[in-house]
Amino acid sequence: MEKLAMTDADFANLARILRKVDFFAPMTIGQLESVLPYIMLCRYSKGEAVFKQGDAGDAFYIIYEGKVSVSVKKGFFSFAKQVAYLSPGDFFGEMALLSKDARSASVTCEEDSRLFVLLSTDFQSVVLQNPSFAAEVGKIAERRKFMSSHND
Ligand code: CMP
Image (cartoon, rainbow, N blue to C red; front, top):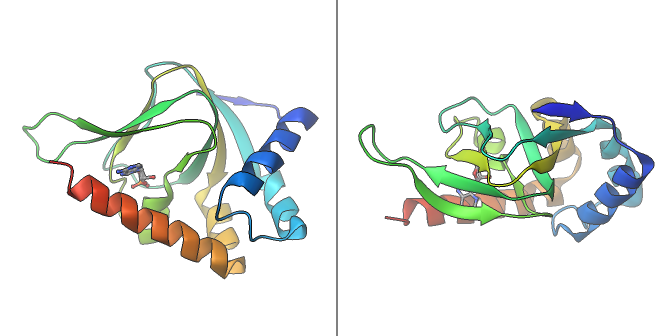
């Protein structure tokens, strides 16, 4: 993983992506602008793990470019099973931040990827300031939890 400097074009693209993500949309332009400075841009290589199932949750991710797979390992002796592929505009890493549990799945880059990263403390302050954001992210996290637990 390599942290990149963000250009004006990246900031403009980030603002555009955030407005298209359902739960960022209800935020006012002012609220959105207050979040932008906290978002980092990081580059990952194909095959690189963003994090592993069981890790502590330290950040929230939005895909800018590339593709990641989400895989879950049910028991110590079982193989990891892919439950989803996520692409630009999709986000991940919200579950551990909302529940304070460990990461529920491993996320691996299937292609060279650039990800927007919001550290946990900054994610928590967005959640506190935006109840509609918190509610939307919570709904999606519940749906994913359900799908992962029924993926046998
Ligand atoms: P978290 O538990 O923090 O870390 C693993 C992430 O994978 C999880 O948050 C979700 O963002 C994502 N995830 C887990 N299950 C699914 C699923 N079934 N579909 C899409 N994404 C998922």
